[in-house]
Amino acid sequence: MVTRIAAAQEAQWLERLRLAMPDEVIVPFRDLTSAQRSLVDIAIVANPDPAEIAQLPALVWVHSLWAGVERLVAELPGFRPPIVRLVDPELARTMGEAGLAWTYYLFRDMADYARQQRARNWSQLPYRPPSAVTVGILGLGALGANAARRIRSAGFLVVGWSRSPKKIDGVQCHDGDAGLAEVLRQSDILLVLLPLTQNTRNLLDAERLAMLPKGAKIINFARGAIIDKGALVAALDAGEIAHAVLDVFEVEPLPKDDALWDHPSVTVLPHISAPTDAGTAAAVVTGNIARYRRDGIIPPAIDQARGY
Ligand code: NAP
Image 1: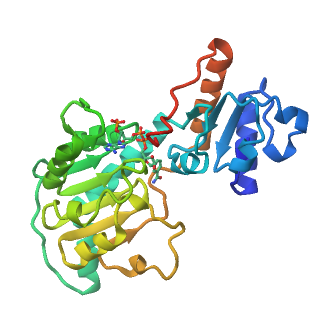
Image 2: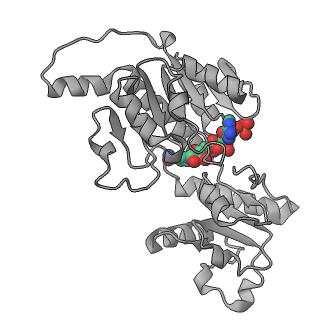
Image 3: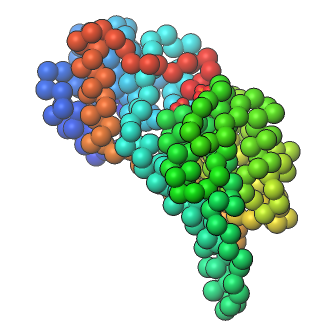
C-alpha cells in the first residue's frame, strides 16, 4: 500500500483491507523489505509518492482508492502499468444524492431566502415547478449518469454532456463543442461532474459561462480548476450567474483569505459532496483483486494519455 495520507487514515484502510483480504499480504510501503519490494505485483494507492512507486519493479497494476486520478496521472508521466480507479456504486449514490440536494437548494431559492432573512426582507419569489427547470450535467460517467437519472426522477428536465455519445432514458445527451454550447444555453442549473484533464482545465471560461442563461446557477462537485475562478466571480458580481455552490477548489483547504468565503453569491463546501465510504470502497477493491487472482483479469483501467 503506497499512500501519502494521514497515518490514522492509512491505518484504518489497512485494517479494513487486511480483514477483507486475509490471503493477501498488504504492507505499507515503508514496512516493505527490499526483497518484498521486488515482489509487489499490485499497489493499492492513495496520493502515492511517485518515488516509492518507482521502487516496485514487478508492479503489474495499480488500484487507486480514489475516484479522481488527475494527481496520479500528473505525477506518474509515462507510467506503464494499468491504473484502476475506484468505481463504487455507493459513491455514485452519494453523489447523486448531493446533486439532487443542492439542485433543490438552488431551485427552491434557499440561498436567496437566507440573504433576504438577514436583510429582514419579506418577499415571495416566484415558484416554478421542476418540469420548468433544466439541469445541465457536464460529465455522464459513473457519477454524472447516476446524478442525471436521480435529478430526472425528481421531475427536472435534464440535459447532459460527455466526450462520447451517450443514451440515458429521459436525458437529452450531447457531446462535442456544439453539444457543450447547447447544454450551457439550456441550463438553469449546471452541475459539473467532469474529471480534471488537459481538456477540461478552465473549460468553463468567461466565454462559456456567458453561454448560460442570465441568472443561471452552478454546482461544481468535480474539481476547482475546471472553472476559471476569475471569470466565475466576474459573472457572479455582474449578476449574470446568480449563485455558485462550490465543493472543490484549486487549493484545498480553501485558504482563509480567499474572497470566495465571503462572496454573497457563493456557497463554500469543504469537499463533502461524495465522501469515499471506506467499507464499500474496500469491498470494491477486494472484489477486483480477487477476480484478478482467480482469472488474471485486470479491471478496466484509465486511459493515461486521455487523463481519466
Ligand atoms: P468517469 O466515470 O470517468 O466519467 C467522466 C465523464 O466525463 C464521462 O462521461 C466522460 O465522457 C466525461 N468527459 C471527460 N472528459 C471530457 C471532455 N473533454 N469532454 C466532454 N466530456 C468529458 O468519472 P466519475 O467517476 O463520474 O467522476 C467524475 C469526477 O468527479 C472525478 O474525476 C473526480 O474529480 C470527481 N469527484 C468528486 C468527488 C467529491 O467529493 N467532490 C468525489 C468523487 C469524484 P465519456 O463518457 O465519453 O468518457
